[in-house]
Length: 404
Image (tube, rainbow, N blue to C red; front, side):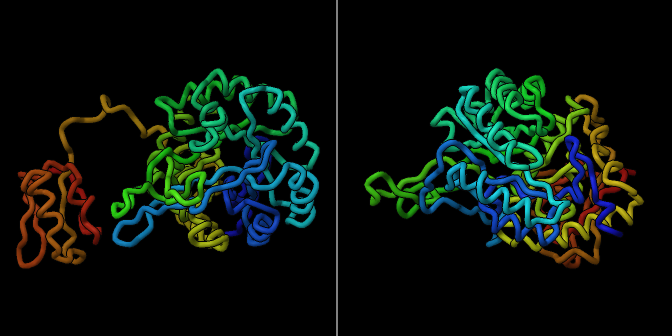
């Protein structure tokens, strides 16, 4: 299937494929962005540009692992280190001149709650030839201390005000990047739309404390205090595969509440299957950060090929046909049947005899599983269909069938 089949319209812009670099280290400068553009990415959102460049602590990245495998990452990195003029006079013109014509460039901007700053930044960026502007009102660390980032994004009134202020400064499409660190995302999304947003991006990172070095009682990642000797840490932004359930929840809630609003999905997109998940809950474009930081820009090929092959196998002629397909099936708890219609069954040729399901069901379930000739066997009369056995089965040897 030709990659042209992956094209999609988003906020009035035609993207050759839905995969974008999100506003993060992989989009820190012209060199990084141009490398991604030449490898086939549909576009990029620049590292956030503001009035004053940022100086970051070291170290600033922390890992969450399970059995040695990375499942999440925390960062305490902020915005672009370079002055606004570096972007407007050098990097953006270079990217627009040297990137393929079908590569779309979006600039992320951030200012204080004062509307004038947003208007001025939007005006300045609009003169560079970028294709759209994304408003960062969602950075969960560092910026809120300065009454920026998520300090704004957690307040519907401020979100509406700064969006309206940016709208005064540009005719370009405006995306507003939302924070998941709120009780209800819908009022925040509605405020952005009321202020003049053309699209929404969700989610930014989740405020977190990645862990503690128990030998020194120091938060991770370990940075340093003002004297450059005392080891300290702070709350950061959590990202990677482990946040995907939050991202899917937020995107689906926005899509259900605002069905006409284009959404750029972000959060744990690491392969074509997670891309499909976001498309099916309402996203139209897909922003990727952590997977690129771990595996490099070349993942675009396997993601695009995988998405194309899936479309061909399932008979999707366009991405549009896939967008939001799962939304009608996201219901309320009240609407669900309370009599479990299914029970678990072991696929015998996959079972490794590890007994993980037996232990889990005995102590966290319904004592419905026992071992027989080194294969797990499920007592359907005791099985409650809760799904715990499938959660702990690393061999994917559990399936669910209708109860007899």
